[in-house]
Image (cartoon, rainbow, N blue to C red; front, side):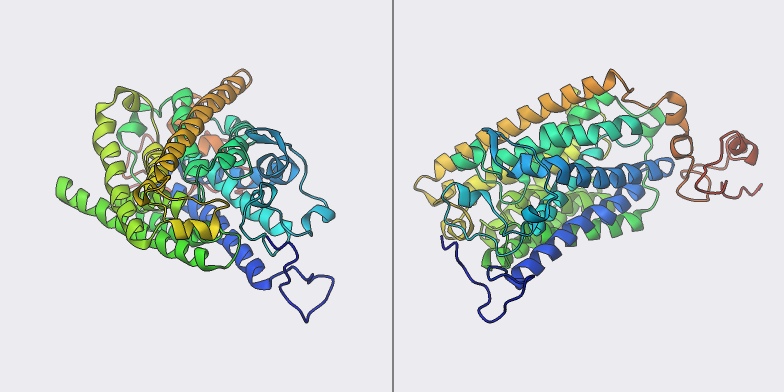
Length: 480
């Protein structure tokens, strides 16, 4: 590797060192912003609109809080736990990433520390710290989808930093930061395991310990705004170009391949899921189309820049069908999945899809594409040679991520439960946002039910103390 690369030969300035490539730096900051927009406002809008009206504010706030809390924890401690010097084979040494001397120097990546052949990024450490933060933030927000509409907001506020420290950083260091799975050669191009498998498994585990929604919510949980849900889903899809396109740490050929494959897989999966809905249920579902889109995006993520585009289409087909089967058929036949109330089906859309993508990458990773980005010669099992070993590595990495997330999430929640109830009290579960936050999403009554004067009256709302932030606004009731 040439550590003395020069990006510009005729420009010298304190803010433009010889190693800085403005194009790479601009793309990395754009990619970071795109991934950030997936969470804020993408998933905030998606969560607020896909749930029952009485939980719109609470669901949006869980995402909003996680985004802010993760950023502060990330720069104070967690970035260097995930991408810093080794403390244990699966964990880095935590330290702040706040000093000027640390942030303005050239970014350092694990491939360089372990003798890899990939190019060292041509931009400052500050760009890399923020880019990786957006990945950590969206992981917590995806996890939240499993426990919407019943988790105590105070318990969630404690859970976010603890899970980031004791769960996310372990997976990130092991697979991306130079840990034992990285050194062994396991592949996770942009987060199929670190983000999607982790959030899906931890979400299911958290849903088990928090408990289910109340009976009325489990039986009827219609989205309060399907069109707004589509707006959030659109931001999520478009933002994924930064999600996978930013993984090479440069605006290069592999970045272009990753962006194209990401969109091919998403579109294919959406169409397959929709066709299955039409075949088995007689009509296309908008919510189903969004779920198919998400599974296609999650599935391609671990191999976006490593597989050919025809392979991305195959991954999209499988992503639109296997998670569909797990959600629509296996879920109804499995007593454990029936018992655990995963509100948005994060286990199916992220854990199943992420695991599927990781395994398919072990089969379909193309040797020449792998050479563009990976620090060692790698190939999928379908390309012969030592590709079979790569598939085994993918299986072992998945088992480690699953086991660690089940154990760490369980321990974290049991510790929190000693001090804070994990579940909201019954009166808050019945009322929703107004009881939890003193705020409501809309100045309208009802979740699609008929007008009931015993519930929808001004007298009923006056019993709740007004929010200090809304000037007492509660909407208008019209007696019909």
